[in-house]
Amino acid sequence: MRLVAAAFGCGFSPFGYLGLPEDHGWQAVLFTALAASCVALLALVVDDGRDELWLAGERGGVLVPADAVERLLRDAALSHVEVVRAEVEVRQRRGGLAATLAVALRPLVDGDAVGAELGAVAREKLVRVTGLAEVTVKVRPRVLKVRQLARYLP
Image (cartoon, rainbow, N blue to C red; front, top):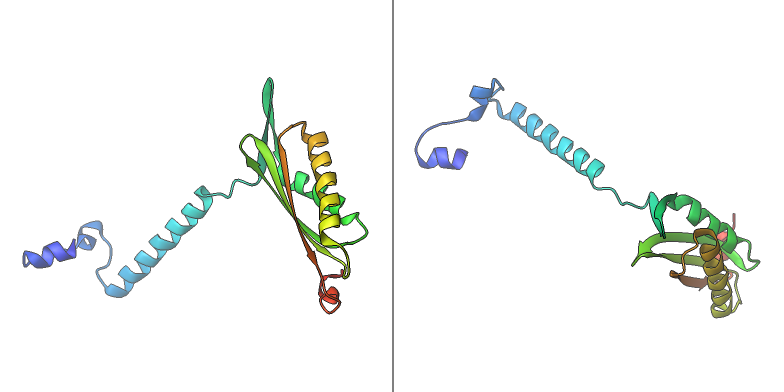
């Protein structure tokens, strides 16, 4: 607006009509507060949507807390002897559930075999708890070295 006013040779400023101070310092504070409030509102509106999972059934569906399902899979993974740490992410994908397990394993362990075991256990638990036939489980095993083990132990 000021560019248009400058092009026509007048010193128009909407701040005088709004009753706001025309000082540049106050304008900077006002614009900063406006930008901060827009960012805060945007953060409230744009949510990651992972708080709840919609499990559709034949006669409707049910909302399930994603944390509860993740906790179930994390506990199942940590119950394995070779697992030191487990991180789980569950999301909805094409009408079913998709889970990703990132597990840190003890040194000198066959990561593929333990990953296959954990994948089967997690798949069985998800099918049993949710009742969904379409369940995808992806396991990312990471075999730790002896030097790394101290950082991962509780």
